[in-house]
Amino acid sequence: MAETKGFEPSRPFRAYSLNFKAIERKTCVVTVCGFPQAELQMPRFIQKRRRKWYAVLEVPKDLRPRLKKSRFVQSLKTESQSEAERLCLPVIHEWKELIESVRSGLPPTDAILAMRQHKLLLKQKGVPEHEVDLVHAELATETDELAEAHLVVYGDWLVLSEHINDFAERLSDQPKTIDMKQRDLLRFSKMFKYAHDATTTSVQEWVENDLIGKDGLALTTCRRVISNCRGYWKYLQRHQKLELAPPFDNVVPRKNSRANRSANSKRQHFTKADFQTLIRAADDDSQLKDLIYLGAYTGARIEELCSLKLSSVDSNSFSIEDAKTSAGIRTVPIHSVIKPLVDRLRATSEDGFLLSGLTFNKYGDRSNAIGKKFGRLKGRCGYGRTLVFHSLRKGVATQLEEAGIPENISARLIGHELKTMTYGLYSGGVTFETLQEAIEKLDWGG
Image (cartoon, rainbow, N blue to C red; front, side, top):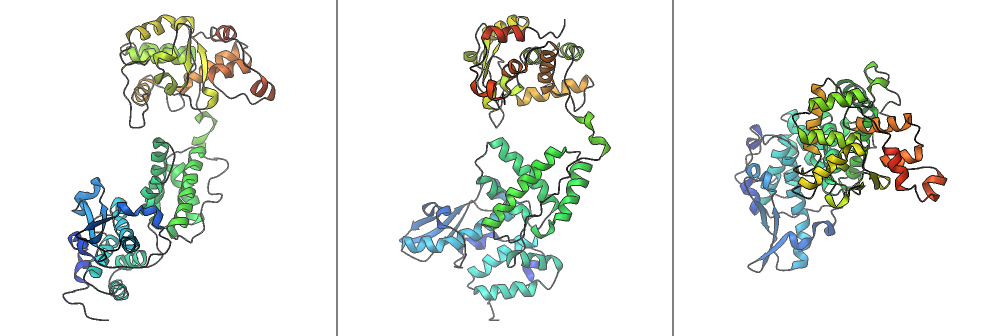
């Protein structure tokens, strides 16, 4: 191997020290297969300075303190834009790998991060690519940690946590759904550092021992987690050259045999006595008390109630337009018990919403904070995980059934899909008077 002036190969790695200042003047060009030019949007990553083109990549604000810089800059040593666009690809790719290493939670002293930085540094010094590989192959013999780092940087070992953010950026779901998928994948990558660690057997043990056993997740939640992991795995195969088969077939048991996941763990409905208990407990919080009354006499979801605008409420009915499903878009007559409450809320609203004064969370949801407040309230009343705000909705359905209301009418009030051909496809619906008569059957006592 050719001698590199001023280079001491083992010294930076014994302490895994990082010096990111040397990256700015890196001038290497490598071949990166399968890195599509269209995805980079070239003008965003190249700049012309004094007739020469430079590769430029902004560092995310939250990572700038760790990377000690706000952007990466490197001369491409060409005056041709088309040539700059070609030369830019591998440079941007390596910078993005370095950024993802930091974002994934690897500590600054991690051998993988240090080796990647050192690889860039050596190339900036003019060391040929094959010699850089030899240098690190030699260093990899010193410790197991360096051996692992070499397999990640030069081999086919893939760190599962590194690409979660890139995967999330490609999703077209709602922000709340994207965050949920990221949480599931972080849970997965916390258990399995490398892709090859996740075998069908090990994933099955993780589901049964950790997700179900320790965390107490329901089977439906476990299936969601595994479904999100499967989607991430497909992304890694398509974009990160992962060649391992997905380890997710039949890893979630069909039936949960554990005693603590019995039928009693399903969500239950609130009774009249439960409603009175909640109202008494909420006596000092008029806003929460109003919400409970609205939920009990409409059967609406908490999100539907909190998003109701004054323009969707008249003296006789609610028009629920922001619903979870298309069947949820409906008109609900106002029960006589809550008419005075609705009139008061309409007259005193200061922000155009029926429930005034609620705040939006980062997903644009007004129900989050007051939903948590309800959770604390029902906890103080002694109700566990099987009774939630949705249990008022279940209570409405229960009362309608006990009153002998036909299911098609109850479904239209609550916002459930009618799956029969006659009522669901052909029927034009029922009259408002029929719905009003049905809603008046609700009686929570007091």
